[in-house]
Length: 534
Image (cartoon, rainbow, N blue to C red; front, side):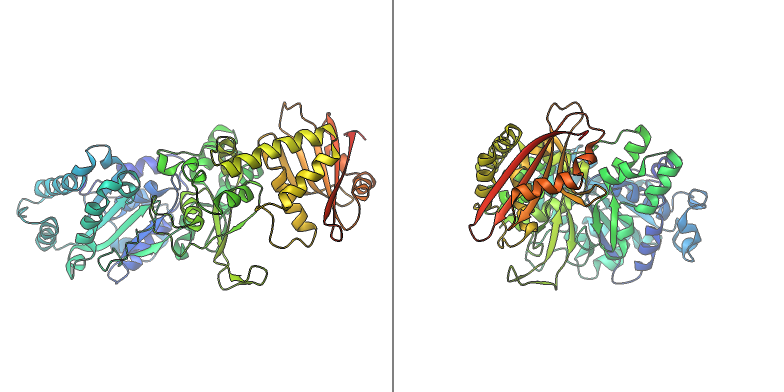
């Protein structure tokens, strides 16, 4: 048992001894790839989505230097017919690239890996010659032991994200192992790489192209193993007495393949343990920080960021992203990176056609949950890009004018957003008016909870802004009309008792009616103040 060769099962034993959600079904999928041409597997997902847990699990299962039968006996994999066929049958090479980057200078990384693995081989197998290139020594080891390796690389993309200056050398190292003619099949029974980014595209024939890739965009059979499923979260909540609805609001919202309800596992575990529902989002470097990308001066990006913060979905073409954190040809590349980082969720709608936009849609992205919405809120006022700053400043003024009852100023502000680059291409119904209103009130997100189509018992209020706890601001009920009148909107609020939605809120409630007249192309506004008890 060594550090890099056959690390044993102690890591996974510690995981199982805690509050472990059984993801051992993943092992059976890897087993099915052994001995096939699809035995090189790369799975990418955001930080804190269980990548290291999966790597430790695979080490414990395949490592032949330990006995893990009791460790897996009561887990899902033990019920699979192939369970015993691969259990503790292989030499495992395990590399945690984030950990390795912390040990040496970037330029020393590859030589350090080779030297440490060869040292472990020499220690365990006296008869193996360690002279020659790294891949040659691995071939000699397999010939000596009669057993090929399983290679597991955790955070495989860390050198690309954190130290781009060694990217070429690092990729060359991986190509030596996984692209050599006949070499890979002689050394490895399987390889499993996991990281945040998919394998980098470099356009060359020497790219690491033999891996089967599974990502947040296209997880296929691995969708159940990206995060926690809804059933798993329900079970956790029952066991730990967690509030399921709060956890769903804060940490659900990721669409991963056919799984339409995927939760951030790290945040869920923190919440059920502490009983506190808040953001546990972790960032470890500038390459993972939202602000790094929000401020980029890329055409159309600021408009899409504003739409996302307002609660809208945006169209994104993910096809041309180069799978790195430096190469951005357009806004789609930035948005695709944010999907891989976990800041956005993605739903594929390719093969569908939008007559309005006269283009084929690749997919839609939106902010998945309250945890990530909190991250966007925190950076909104720190953004340095002029267009986004201007929108925030105008939104602040709009809120002040709404509270002051300045109907002319409110109507003018809505009109300005309608006339700006943020407006929808087609402005032809109440939904498009709602879209503009949400953008206009963008800055409310850090002071209010926004609820759309809130049921009142007699219909639904279009938008309700409820002040956050201890806020002195009034609540806002906004009703929209199309080719009617703002007075009619106010009347509907009163007649349907929309203000009763806020009967437990003791502060002031402001009623806002907004109408758009298609003939005059003018927005009109009426504002009244009421107490929630009314």
